[in-house]
Image 1 (spheres, rainbow, N blue to C red):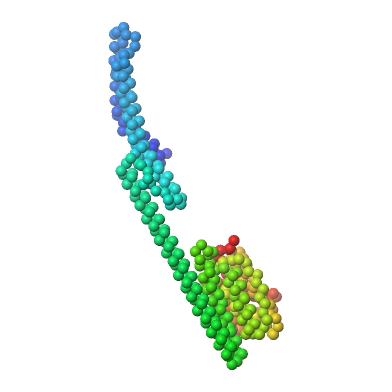
Image 2 (image 1 turned 90 degrees about the vertical axis):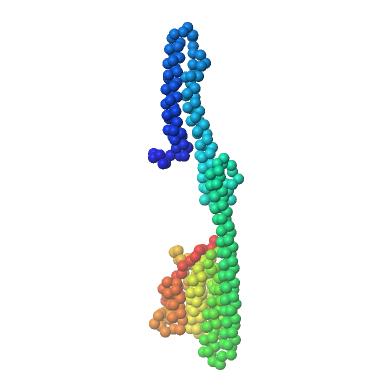
Length: 343
């Protein structure tokens, strides 16, 4: 293993050993010389063993070298290795998500390491302040977005009411019908903005609640078709709990409005039943609208000339999905992307 990959403690021990190696060699040489001198002195005298002075002369140089190693290691460990290890653990906790980690309350017995700890604490405080400011800015942005959607929804509802009043004063059925179609489109757009407003709450579900939005649109269509076309309409909804982005919600709202209005326009005076189903298709969603008027020929083909054809196919291009027609079932369907699925 390369030296650069050694733990810091091993590097410190190796550095101390190399630094004190000359002293160790001298200590060994002195101990050997003293041992030989003590042995020679014992050979010339009648003493049985070495004296204390002789033993110290042999062992003291080695003990001093070992003590130097030990003292050097204790100082390096207390002033360098342990503080850096504690700081590394604190940084690991901080990066793991514990933003409360601070090092200023710990003692490191080194001005340089304490300065590094203070720098870390200062950085952590600045990041915490920035996080608070960012969260406050996001909350304010969400509040302003909700306010914009709320105001747009209110304005669109006013426009829809004005169109309804104008339709009642129309002198011909064609003019009244034209006003009614425009009113239905404006009302659908108002519903979209309503649910953009409702969904743009902090901590709420991401995107627009498709079930709530489509149910709201269908309820409005039942009333508007009954009053303008003088046709009893019942819309059966089978809608899964899905969420779509705001750029997807508008085309879906217009597709539902245009297909239901088209079915009502082409139906002879009789109770009309329309089925709207929305569910999963792979990783996305699929919208289907079925009605008796859609059985057989594709009345909304690009070259059909039907007034709703250009609008529906334009919305299909926005959703990047072709408009599919099932002649036998009398059903139009279109795919769309999802943001997330509600639990």
